[in-house]
Image 1 (tube, rainbow, N blue to C red):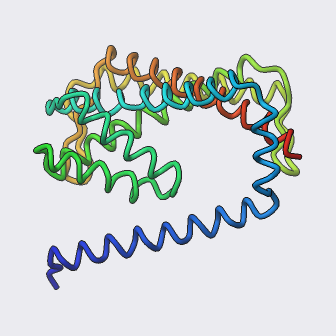
Image 2 (spheres, rainbow, N blue to C red):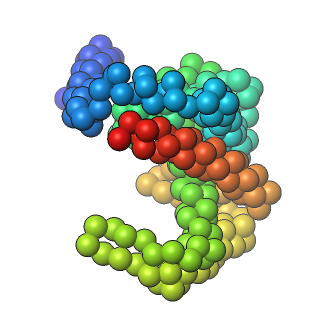
Length: 235
């Protein structure tokens, strides 16, 4: 059975509306114990420079994320102006961070923007795959370094991981990431996945992407610290 363009559009709208409803219901549940007056009081208790830093780090975080798409487009041989990559990246991460279901929400935003810019479906898939893979590799690298350099225990519900265990996990993770990067750099041929060829980034592109991951993660941690402080004020 062939699906028409109108049916696909209706289905896409229905899915987005359904996800939005679920997200708002979840947000209502999460914020049921917090009152607007408490949040306002906590915000007024914070110095203006803290709020300014939070907004600034938020902007820098999203700015750093735009370079994932910009570099991925160059890797696949379909470079576009940075403003186009920035729009696609910002729209994608904003939707996926707030609504969840990143492969559906964020990828849909990228698809609409990149197709309008002249890319086809397989090219968009390549961009999403490269940006996602390098982003999570960078996150894994930051997390592994935190485990290796940290000395405290990690409590996960009823499970407690000691400092030595965390350092061992961090070292294993770093070795695994290093091995994967070495294999990617050494492989000269594109990777074939489900009939789609995926060009692999060179060492310089990987280094640049990891640098932007550090920047985005640092900005995110700064934002989280500010909001934790605000939460303590509310509590």
